[in-house]
Amino acid sequence: MRRRTCLALALGLSVALGACTTMEDGLGGDLIKLNYRATDALMQGVTLDPAQPVLVATLVDQEELSESSRLGRLVSEHISSRLSNRGVRVVELKLREQLFMKGTTGALLLSREVRDVSQAHSAQAVVVGTYTSSGQTLYISLKLVKPEGNTVVSAHDYVMPLNANIKGLLR
Image 1 (tube, one colour):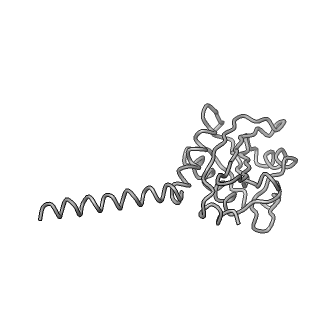
Image 2 (spheres, helix red, strand yellow):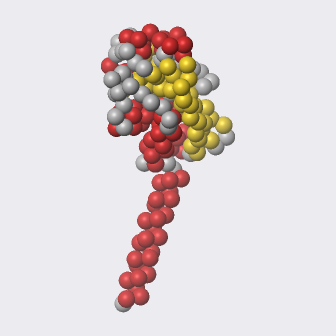
């Protein structure tokens, strides 16, 4: 009886660990953790004024800078959440009328608009980003940009597997 119990527990633990590995491989909930780690890396060594907000634009397709996807919007949401939870004042761009909102694309900040929009919000910085795919990999580049002169203060690049989950978000 005791041996069967141990075997059942071992089997249960094996299944549970297998589910974690599957979730990791498919990203799932780990997509949030991956984007949070990328945000932390982007902000490493950066000092921000807590009185001034930061804007987070929708990540765009590097091949077509006026286009995004559900993935671009989702990554931007994760970045906003992480910054906000870390005490950074983040302005919700979806509530603003003067931004370039293209259908279901999201809040796109074209380079010529960064200065104007950030000045309107007294923003000290803007997070912008692009993504592109190659083979089985999705490459993401994030930049923290000071509006004055579009100066890059910090940058972070990372990858994620281009699996069925990510492909579905790119459509």
